[in-house]
Length: 353
Ligand SMILES: *Cc1c(COP(=O)(O)O)cnc(C)c1O
Image (cartoon, rainbow, N blue to C red; front, side):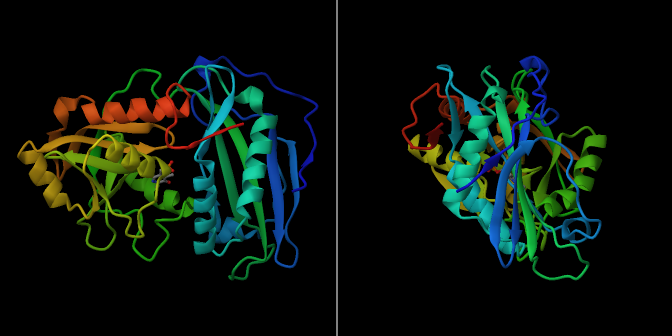
């Protein structure tokens, strides 16, 4: 694949790693490529990071045709850089594209774009454990007309943001409110696709929860508001009476790569993992009986995020006395160990650059 590279004339320097935070600082360059129905993907290029022109009638500004991905480049102790299961992100992006009538990208081309871009931006991968270069590929419909139909023109881009450790202050379990009004997604909708619209629709509940002192909401299904689906923008797992339960992928749940990896690691450790429907009544019953042993969210940003307290219909329940549980801690240690190259990757998940 032909990627034209125009280097910046004004390279920036990396701020101190402790000050990075998440998603606020961007590397020197960005990737862009155009799609036109008659030509396919073309004009792949890496250019200096910055503003770019967009037509006021562009599809994405009116009808929200947008999908994205999120993955990290990790620095190993030996100085090398690596990716974690990048092909899974590429395949998921193509499944999201299919749902939104956006064009798919050849898997091998997408991997080449990713590795070329990360190698060029290598100096932006921070060095401390827990820090990473967050990569944000995204695609949007870019027809310059207001008609509603599958797009004829699209743009694919990738930006990179050096990010600090999610747990700079240590792993503190979060307080979560079970949301029984707003829903994030419905079966038949776009819940399984990583599209901006899902986030737009879920912001209100998150803000309301934050005002009441909760970190995020636990989403229930969009049809009956009965079954547990996700927590904030993460998948969710519970240890109930020895069994590890995570909601089955019914179409309204985002199939997380961290979720999939957690399931494999847990099975390997000898735990029983059930992907099934979990009703909020079963969950509340387990909390009342002291059978809910652990609960955690999982996603690329946090890896795992232990839940220390859950609130349902104004009643609060502690989970594991508000402390991180044993399984949650083991998952965190194993996944971060593989991602940052501290422990051997027996799964073949790592792509060294
Ligand atoms: C991205 C995302 C996840 C987590 O997916 P990972 O591949 O593990 O990062 C979970 N839920 C939602 C809604 C997401 O957007």
